[in-house]
Amino acid sequence: MQTHFEFELPAWVAPFLAQRGDIYATPEDRIALAIALSAENIKQNTGGPFGAAIFDAAGRLIAPGVNLVPSKNCSILHAEMVAIALAQQTLGRYDLSNGGKEIYELAASTEPCAMCFGAVPWSGVKRLLCGARDEDARAVGFDEGAKLNEWPEALKERGIEVTRDIERQAAVDVLNGYAKQQGTIY
Amino acid sequence: MQTHFEFELPAWVAPFLAQRGDIYATPEDRIALAIALSAENIKQNTGGPFGAAIFDAAGRLIAPGVNLVPSKNCSILHAEMVAIALAQQTLGRYDLSNGGKEIYELAASTEPCAMCFGAVPWSGVKRLLCGARDEDARAVGFDEGAKLNEWPEALKERGIEVTRDIERQAAVDVLNGYAKQQGTIY
Image (cartoon, rainbow over all chains, first blue to last red; front, side):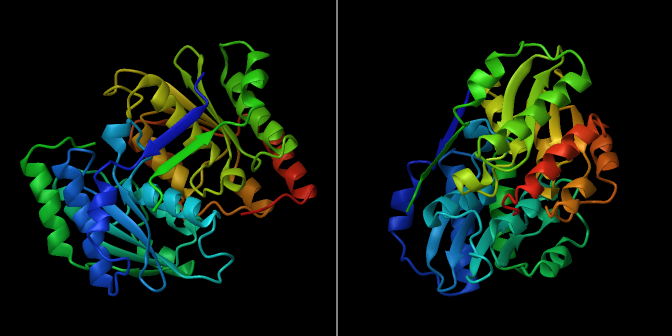
């Protein structure tokens, strides 16, 4: 019976981030980081074409995430989930908002699947930025799951601001590049 | 920047399971284990009142799960997610069904929240057994998230058989016991 589980970000992530600043000032800067992580994750062959990151209200990077599903053999390790787990560990609490007092933001290279959508309110982030749309992921064969059609509104009702289509084409280009090189679709 | 994440089942889990057999023959036996894990998790003060387990088609326990949200400061570590991650690690693949060829089952002491609902299809389990209902969790203050009303049907459409209300009262008793001792609700 296994009782222990762990994951590690790929070794390329730390030097990749070290080349950049600590502050990502605009929503475009923050989504661009998530997209750059998704592109590098394919290039380095460390997972699927998805990246994410959590930032504080000043735009400071708290935790990056990349898809580790195939590399870690774990269906839970979508980029958003990796970023959430690392951000909560960094701050030492399971509610990033600290009881609603603090603003943290999740940037995702593609809109969250059904699982990650469900995970967003539990994480305590108060803003969600998205690059590619669900249908862009579906167009290259990924399944976003059975999600409420009005999922952005459902998050808004829970006090989470959603902004879509930020640098959408750049995010789509990464998905399309992955599909063209016949990456694993799961 | 933190790059590593890990969790460990509480130390009581292994001896707790060692007292029992390897095979849980009936759906009632399997849900009873999930409920027993939920009850012991409260008693030992290692997390919230939720337990889960993954079994193979013969009823053999592959991986247990308990809620580790408060103890690990991670909102992702619901009992179902813990069991899925450990089962996939045990079998060495992110699709438990192995391309649809094998039947694995997830038993959950309470019906899955929005996140865990979304995680079920990605895990490759082909059967879901549930004890307490969503409304039982809500009755003691837990939030199940924004989930499709017809979530069991959505899983069925994806080839996942759902059986509800197995040992429901026993599962509800654990939730109520937790609420009475004023456990953390999150």
